[in-house]
Length: 91
Image 1 (tube, rainbow, N blue to C red):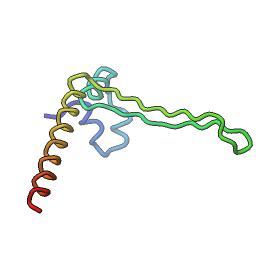
Image 2 (image 1 turned 135 degrees about the vertical axis):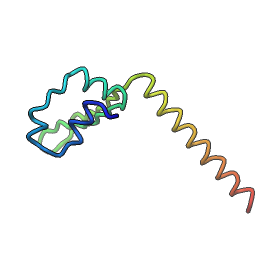
Image 3 (image 1 turned 45 degrees about the vertical axis):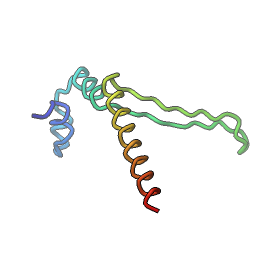
Image 4 (image 1 turned 180 degrees about the vertical axis):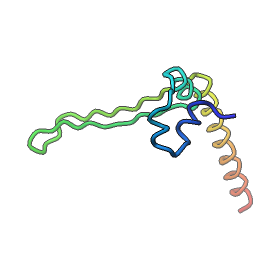
């Protein structure tokens, strides 16, 4: 069973996408469940001389989703470390 957000986004009919009623709450629920990363850079320069550089990284997610992603990343690191140690002892 897919969410209303996925039903609207996954459909290829452009007209149906424009006329669909997707509430802000459904969209926010989807973003919090999946997570969203926004990254951007702005450079302010005068006469081709960079004066100010602004970097922006924003993560929008629920605490539970972020915790799950970090846990999976740690498991991957541990598995890679174990495999590297195993390969080094075989040499």
